[in-house]
Image 1 (cartoon, one colour):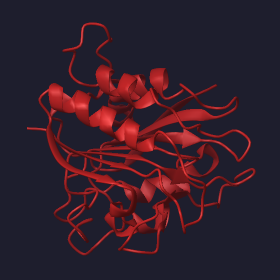
Image 2 (cartoon, one colour; image 1 turned 60 degrees about the vertical axis):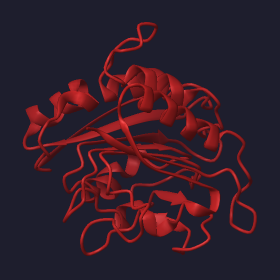
Image 3 (cartoon, rainbow, N blue to C red; image 1 turned 135 degrees about the horizontal axis):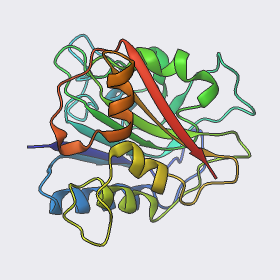
Length: 248
């Protein structure tokens, strides 16, 4: 049974960042589609119940709270990230929440996230936010994150070439990664689905990015191109990384 969690943050009152309109809607769409497809919903957090500590590594995997991102097989996050203008190779990638506990709210992905390690289970990390996967810094910021994690998707951009708040991007992605039960959407690999639908409602110059780990070059490329949620592949040894992107 595939377990998944969702997190959507619209309300940033009292935290850095403007309020967003569609993030909870997007998380709810993921939940509805995946549950219909037979996936098991685990946690579904909103606004202040999404904590920075949910994403930070703990001694036994990301289990600092009941909402830890390393507990399910799939974790979907929609909310703020942080964009530089423009980023350079040493700039970090961020998730920015507005939690009522588990602060600080800003999470440095490359320094603080270690997914799939210890008792962690996470296979697929889906981040729908501003600039959490900048291409220029992907080696420094994302290679350390993979400790059993199979694939991650996100966006690369700048303050002026940003991921825009969307009401439809997540549902299209969910339909196409649910195992082919929705005849009106193609059955796609995770990477191909993000290349197809991750470009919905983004600014010109923003890029949808997917990265996979593998035991060698061929394994990483195969996972990037072909791995599906229901493949039930074993955890990769992160010896090699392959990524792809498409820009609006």
